[in-house]
Length: 84
Image 1: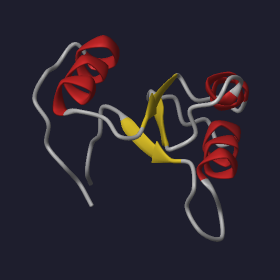
Image 2: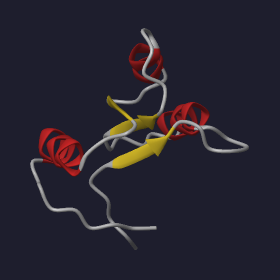
Image 3: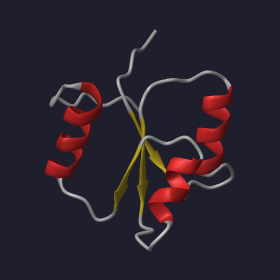
Image 4: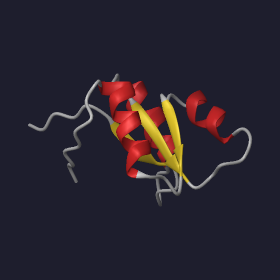
């Protein structure tokens, strides 16, 4: 069993995009923070992410500092352990 603190969700995944994956996860009771990762940075893109159940939004390109801030904001941790 793996435990996670946060999900960085790619919005443009093939087959099932990050929006749909988030909706399905939330419908199944998934409660961890989900942060959108997207190249979309137009007005309304952040709101679209929030409206499907994501907790925050990061647009590409992003820096390591951006990821660290998100980790600290949503988990209280600044360390990153990756699970793939």
